[in-house]
Length: 467
Image (cartoon, rainbow, N blue to C red; front, side, top):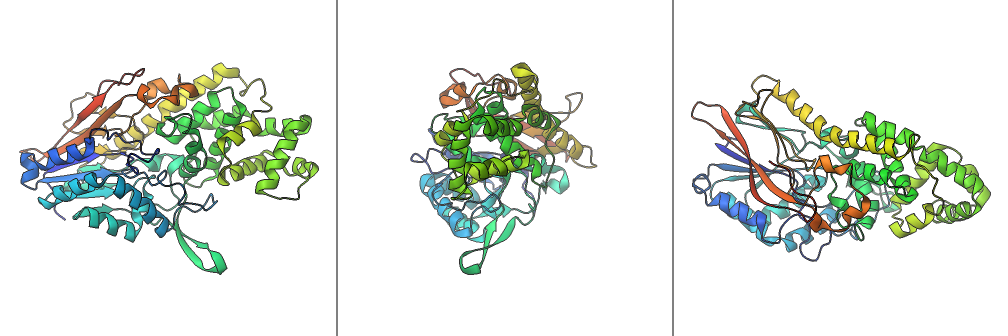
């Protein structure tokens, strides 16, 4: 495959089911992405077929579209092929204009490439690819690897979730797992990653009240925010999620997240409340009967939940079973200890702030590692929803590292640690920057890259940072 002279890279659109889908968070009220595609197609390079549009992961919001389709209560298995196709049907129906525009763009001799991200691992399915190609003829897919290369390896493009322990996969090259279905018949499914589990089973419930909660990226940022709230139900959910991530055999938690989990001591607090608070024990026993053992007595439950590991596994089980968030809060907020961290709220806030900065910096460090390799001139990642740009230590490279952020509303990493859960009630409070990265060969044969903004808007309360 010969490379096109011009490469346009966008990331993290999270396109859902359209106007009737509350999980559709990408900015589309004025047909933004469709207009972007058509403008690229009608440019001089687009008319000449000289452009590749690389959609760098999390293009399609499979994780939240049609939640009724995925009914399996599992921490290991995500969608079957038929379930992913059903979700895709809603996306195609909600945004036919986008796929028609992609087909027009490719029809002029340009190239459209879709790379998968953690929210659209469903792109690995053959029937999903077939349906997308029918809606947008000419679309190509690149799956099975962390990075793609263009221009003889001088351009490196990857979604970026491989550095995030909450959204990593055991086997990204082949993320399929076999499950014993009904009657003992083997059933092929996609692997479930921790972040998707937390999103589908807990965050979607929060979204009814806190509309912006599912826009917090990476998902560990939302977990840290929940820790900071002096509300025990939220802290219990965040603690369980981060412990689940730590058991997932991909990458270890950051030092900040390990410290947060350790300082909070949520598991020991749950055990203490079970021992001294009869009302709390009664409520936990009711939940335990619902998801574990219908015949369990209060004494059985007190004995079963006598270790932090057992408490963590039980809470994860509640999450997997999809306990409604209002039930979750009524269960755990009945007994809220006075403090959630060894050093009090101030220490928790400082840990949260350090963790927020860590996500963005770690991905930049990964980019710098690639740029240190011979011949690599430009690296583009996504995933964090945080626009970022690095043109070398002296800021004088024609290339460098770029992260266009997302085509959703977002909160800047420097604001995250000061947020409160109530701040997430109104999406219009947050800005958007619809960025893309343009990479092209110069007359000298080197690559020139720049990040450009297609459209932006300030939020009611949080202004976008300079790009």
